[in-house]
Image (tube, rainbow, N blue to C red):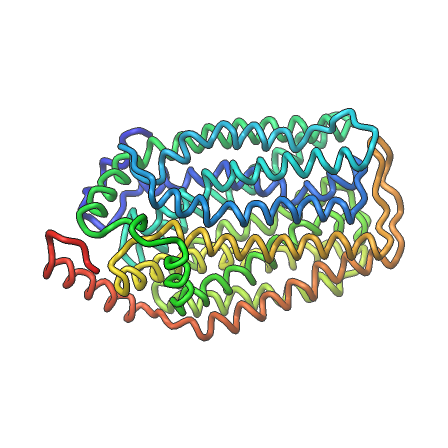
Length: 478
């Protein structure tokens, strides 16, 4: 894939099919690893490692908070990086191996016969893993506005990115289904799953790096000719400028609400299928596949619909269908297996828009910031979008863990069969998969209604940027 980026001229806003594939491959590995964590880490802690639900939720919360703290730091550092491969690719190149190592260590149960020591181990590894994840993922997603400035082309580029993202999620679930069907040692099964996912993640990251390298370097040369770097502005001032950008506040709010609904639903789904519906863990993987498979197919449908009706309209359509599905899951009773799959497919329609729409909005916000300030600061915007999302997610996962423990959820000691959960714990699981995500989705729809950047407004922003460049071709705008 080393020559794919050369197929697209440096001054073209249209991207070749092969370059889009190369860029999308960068999200394959992180999607596989993240999806396994979302679906399996909480059950792994409670049902395999033997950690109480409250402590397990606390581990997840600390990891996400540390991850959120990393985001603005790495965002600013990547904006200021100077390397022959540009600002973003070196972070991905040198961060891929540490990322893989710390991911794998999360699936090891150390020989510590003490819950407190286990808790400390997983907190430490979680912090280090999230540092590695941010070091590769934040620079990767910040590449989107650098690859093209075309309004619709960005939606198409993100469609390819999330094709690999959701595809990776599906692959991870298929891997889990195969691995969990072989043998009867859950600890060993989780370790093998972690090892396979680590290998796929590292290979896909390097495929992306070499596939888009030429195009990124071309974009970096244009960037250096057009604008100053963010290094000339102090961090405190950068934050003031970023948070004075009203459309940016709407985008991070939309993403926070959407992704919180995705993550909370995913983290509780296995407990819902196994404990409430009374089905084996293999059934959980098929339910998750129904959601992710539908989301993958709908990415390209929603991308086409967006070109005709706009991003906001697509978001409203998807969220409306998703809310119906979440309410149905709340009301679902054991034995209604066919209806469970129908609702899972319906949820996939909405999950797809949660992936696609907010990330397609953010590059437009960055162009508005460039118009207002004369500077390109992709790193800082992407960093704070992800930072606030992770803080909200950390709080949500922590509250879910605490609620389960307060409701009497019974954790499983390593090597022991799953216990019968009390009715209070079942009710807590149902509330976590129904009303909680629905509140988040309603919040996202309210914010999307007020999001101000339309296709016409974005075209005007780009026109003014081109006029500014023509008026002052040899010096950066101020």
